[in-house]
Structures are given as structure tokens and as C-alpha cells.
Length: 320
Image 1 (cartoon, rainbow, N blue to C red):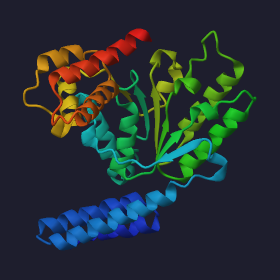
Image 2 (tube, helix red, strand yellow; image 1 turned 180 degrees about the vertical axis):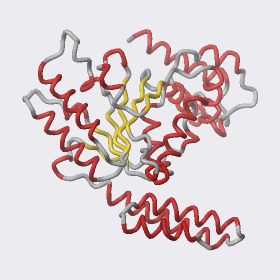
Image 3 (tube, one colour; image 1 turned 120 degrees about the vertical axis):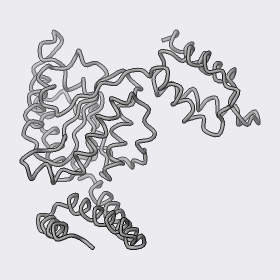
């Protein structure tokens, strides 16, 4: 049975049109019912909440006509367990999720959950995957901002498009990813900078500073040294990504190989040869090995086969 406080919270969230708070309290009620042995009721409540969230996400993911070229909605089914990163970074990601789910508690103290996140690190280290995981874990629609279509050569047009995007962020809750953020976040002191891009960056700084939505705004960059210093203090958190260390590479390979993993695997060789490869590259190497194993009627991926795929990847690097 729901407590008096939970009933009041449900009523407040309903009339305050705070759907996420309503869902959170409803799930708390479900958990309480489960503890009291009312498993069927708890299951029904969770199903109702999940179905409502799914319908809400589908409804919200529709992009207005004037933003069709700028926002790409995506379905996200990437669970948190798929991300292989150091525990310290995973804890930071879990804190974002926890604060979002408990945002009504923070707001009651005049505080806000982390809503503006900067992800920094080399290509293929999990930045985009993290954004998709956040959308999946929080049951929010995911939008990728098409930065290449956002920036134009016409004076004032890019800033106008940016305004439309932030109006959408304010109006429709979701996870909004500005990938390849260097294109609009470059330092205003760079020699190759032009007046229009300075105006665009100034507009972005103003929009993100005044944004009061409950959406998650994520900016991802491969080159933090190119970013304007003023950007960093506009974000609630800055997460740094690196190429996987030994144990992360081991876990990643085991996860991706799955049933194709061989108990006779010689880890020493594989871990030595895979050093310096990104998460995405290791994932691709494993998938290439699995495909070759399938086509050659092999039940597992041997050490030699995976080393061959790693060698091919390294040869590609040398040609670049």
C-alpha cells in the first residue's frame, strides 16, 4: 500500500505535469509492494510505467519539420552493461543516472541534477555509446544533432538554427548529443577563427547557460585542446575517456566473443597486441573474427584468428 507521502507526491507530480517524478514514485510503490509479497501487483505497476514511458518516448521523438535536417532521432537499446570503462568513470555515469531519477528530491532543496555533460577522449572510446546508454537507462528519446548541417556560411543562420534546437530541448525532454563538438566549440583565440564562428560559439554559451530544461545536453569532443575555455564551466560534469587498459580489453573481448570465446585462449599475446586499440576497434576486430569463424564452420574464435584480425587492423593504421 502506498504511503501518505507517496500519494501526495503522485498527486503533486500529476498536477505539476512532472511525468518523471510520477514514474519514479510509482516505481517506489511497486518496490514496496514487492517487499510485502505482492509480486503480481508490483509487476503490473512496473508494466504500466514502462508502457507509459515507451509511449511517451515515441511521442516525444517526433521532430518538427523545421528541425528535420538538424536532429536525428534514434532508438536506443544499449544497456549499461555493454559499456566497458574504468570503474571511476562508470561511477560518474551512474551518478548522472541516479541524480536524474531522484531529481524531484534535489529540486525540493533548490538543487538540479546533472543536465549538461561534456565527454572528452579519443575516437572510439565510448562517448557516443555513453550518450545512448543514458537515453536507454533514463527511458528518454535520443537525438543526435547534425553539426555538419548546423554550421553554414551565411551570417546569422547557424545561430538561428541553434536557437531552434535549444527551443526543442526546452520543449521536449530527451538526450541531445552534439557530437564532433569542435566544429562549433573551437577556441575564439584560434588564428583560423572567423567572426561568424565566434558569434555561433557566443550563442551556444548563452543558450546552454540559460537552459532550464530537464533534458540531458551532451557535447562530445575528440580534441579538448581546441575547445574554448569558457565552455567547460557551462557544463555540470566533464567525463574523460581513454583507450582501454589491460583488464578493460580482456572484459571487452570476452563480452563480444560471447559463445565464440575459447577456453584455450592465450591472453598474454592478445592483450599485448591489442594495446593502443580503441574500444570500437577491438569490437570490430572481434566481430570480424566471429564472422570468419562462422564462415569457416568454426565453433570458437582461436587466439591465432583474433591475432590475425588485430594485425589487419594495425596494418590499416600504418597506411593512414
